[in-house]
Length: 269
Image 1 (cartoon, rainbow, N blue to C red):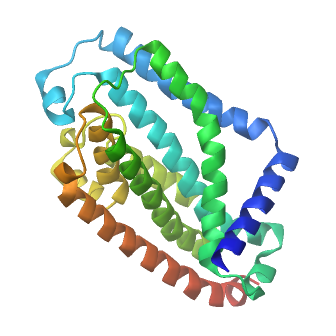
Image 2: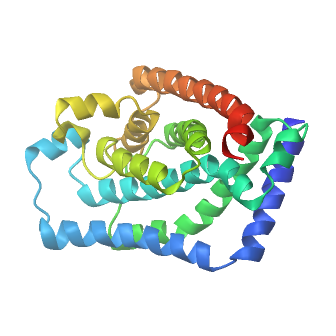
């Protein structure tokens, strides 16, 4: 049943995207990815002129800022797309007038959100390919990547995005707002999760807050696997913390969505 719901949701969303905005939406995401890569390149070569202090190499585990920043920029784009698409699913149903039908349908929420996430992921992968190619052309290198760890770490990162999307979706459904809620979260995670610089540069209170997001440790694990060749055994404590946060966000988000659904039409209609 979950698989059937996920497949149906994927097909519906895919057809909707292709018919409503087949090129403009994808083109915008491609431009955003290329912009982040070019920004990292020009910042490294023309702003800091390739000069890094010892603290960066100590905190980041590498002195290759260009590759460090390109990875962070691409993963930031990925997290925004995944979290936004999952979190906006139900509020979009409401705006299109289909939420009540969805709530009355026998299909489970797990399959619905899974299909939404997979459809978004398939689109993001295609949109990210030009940015990845541009990064390698401009000088990004991964000579020490541990690809088995990278695969597992990327899966954890995607699941972390999914869990945060559920929690954010509950807030959106409760407030019936998307832009203020999502933009506040994305701006804050960009600051505290370490996408463009090591979190050790932040004040300690912000570092502690950053640890409350599963994206922070998932990003660090994925970066270490890509840049330094760390295996999963080397990062066992961080993986455990990520899994606990994923469970917490998923359970809290699912429970909150269920609770908000029951009151949604009574409150707003």
